[in-house]
Length: 290
Image: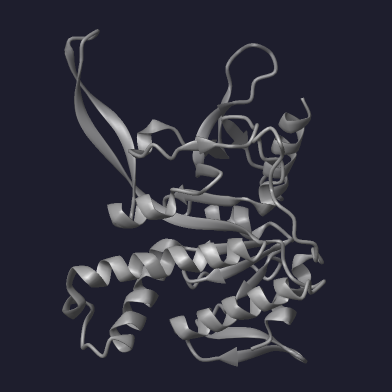
């Protein structure tokens, strides 16, 4: 495994320091623990892989563009094969198991411990939703069972603990960590007193169990939603709307009290098409300075 080569283009952030300030308002979003959710094709993977100081655990088996600014492991080619960086370029590898991901995680932690100048600054888990399947298969083997169902309720709790620990270990080593999750929309009929009729209230539900969702959203400094939204781009006063990629700070529509942000930042950030991660960093930097 040559993780140092996979992450070499992710920047040389060797110093470990806390993402925070005496005021309790965090300022370095790349060293924070973040949860971002979005539907399929919402742009969450493109957003986080656009960070040149990041390393992506590609659990989703996404075929990233060759020009991706972040380091990615494993790299999935357009023909469906998996590759990683070798001394003389990309080399083909077998389809990774969770044990392989654990080895890469341990190497990243070792890089942080020795302040390796080639280590990344931020680790992206893309996605927690896909990671669940890897961990479940791994637990079946670890416990000597024939299927995940044989583990009963203890299996679900064990899976959630393994996933939460994966992120926590990396964060404790000094990395920023971004957990990505898929979500599905839901419309709930609610009686509206003003109109005197039933209206549909829009909510989003992460595609993981409620227990796992609550476990991984206890600590994050930011919970955000990535997706498309109509934005008023008019400069004349006459409304003109265009569909844009945006990052929104999650509010109470997620059904958990752990929403919001410890960052001083806009409630909604319009994302650049070319370099969306730069839009986030600049918005937080500008808001923190004001």
